[in-house]
Length: 185
Image (cartoon, rainbow, N blue to C red; front, side, top):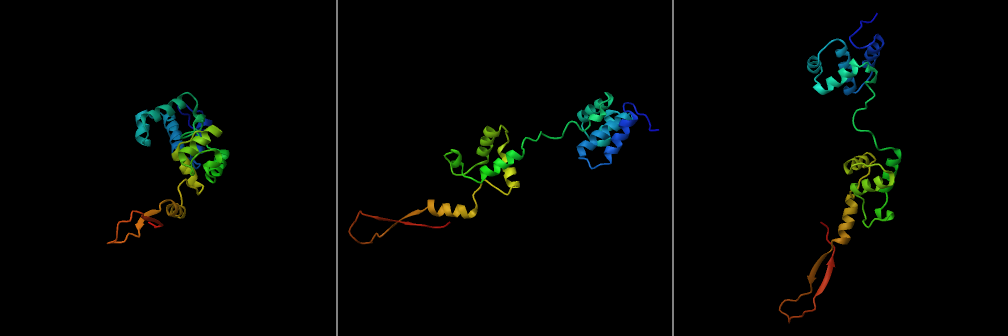
C-alpha cells in the first residue's frame, strides 16, 4: 500500500507521480513537486530551497495540497490566455496581402498598429502591434517594403533637380532649364 501523506489520498499521490513521468513544462512539473513535498511534510522554506521557487509560488501550491485540491494542478494554464484564433490569422494574412486603401484607409501600406486596430474593430480581438509583427513573421509576411519595392519607390519619387544649360561668360538669360535626372542611391 502507498505511503499516506499529510494531505493527499493514495490515489492523488499516485496520479501526481504518474504525471511527473510525462513530458511537462517546467512550471507544471514544479507545481506537482511542491504539492508532493508539502504532502511529505516539507516546510515552505525547505521547498523553496529545494526547487528554487518563490515563497508565493510555494505557498499557493501548498495551500492547494492542504485543501484537497491537488487534482487542480493543471487547471490554471501558464501565461496569458490565447486570444488569436484561426479566423484572426486568416484575416490578418488576407489584410496584409492587400492594400489598406481597399478597406477605406487613406494610406498605401499597413503598419502593425493599423492591422491591430482594424482587427480589433472587426473581430473584437485586441492584440499588440508587436504580436501582430510576430504573427506576420511566422506567416512569412511583413509590413515592411521589400528592397525592390523601395528602389522602385525611390526612383519614381525621389528625382533630383539639376540646373543645366547655363553658359559661362554669356549675357544673363533668366530662362533656366530644369532637367529631371533619376539617380539611384
